[in-house]
Amino acid sequence: MAATNPTPGAYSRYATHQLTHYAESNICAEAPAAFGLKEECRSLLKSNRAEIQDFIMSNTDRRNFFFFSVYTTDLAIASFLPTYQLQTIGLFQGFYVFNGEAVEI
Image (cartoon, rainbow, N blue to C red; front, side):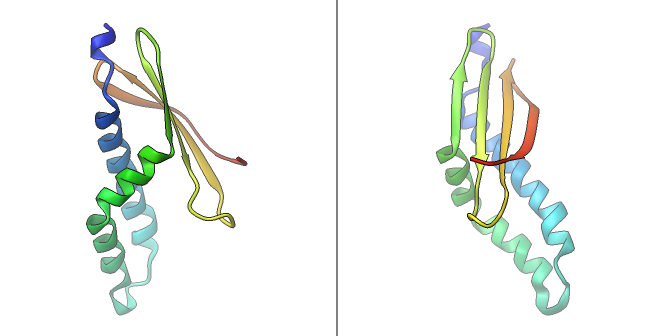
């Protein structure tokens, strides 16, 4: 069963997809249409996917247990913005977010 734990690479792809999808649906969708800001937001997410993936992995801690892995990701963009901590279980080649909240680190 330990062999079915997803790899860190699989987690980075999963987390990047989830974060960019969230940003596109919630941040870009709320951007004003004037001056093409919505499309610029989407374009920035798409063109910076590798940097987003690196950012996520540099802020992620993995604890590997026999039956599953726990990934804890701290998303802190700037000191004046809230920090979010996501905890995800990797199990049977899938990921399940079990905790996501704003925290003070």
